[in-house]
Length: 173
Ligand code: NI
Image (cartoon, rainbow, N blue to C red; front, side, top):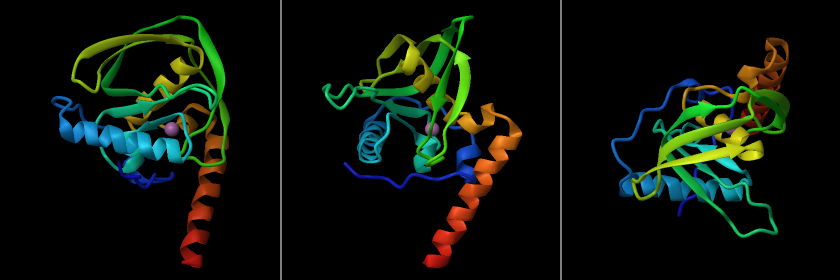
């Protein structure tokens, strides 16, 4: 498995919608494996393909705690088929928006249909943290970041800080 570079906002690729995969073949499985490797190394609990510069609808998630065994979830072409009218608010972060966090309100429960690693159609119903992570990662496939759900004032502040940090990193070489 290969660790991939994670794009940091602002980056045009993070704003582009991803395309559905025709089927989960070896090329998609390799992407899923590399994304898992990249996510665990970061470390993070979710990663979407656009974050590694690949505009295919692929997401990996693992919300297992350190004292639990890994429980990787690989999803291609995920779609929300039902969401609860009840909302939940969680503090979100993102590997593409490092060191910034904000509260985001989303449906508390969702049912998601997707293709698994074997190209089988599956459905998962999730609440709590998993529901949040699923929606956060699926947003990435539409070019949406969690900061797009918060006030433009706060978003502008975060993006300016990230731009400044990138510039400083470039100057340092
Ligand atoms: Ni993210």
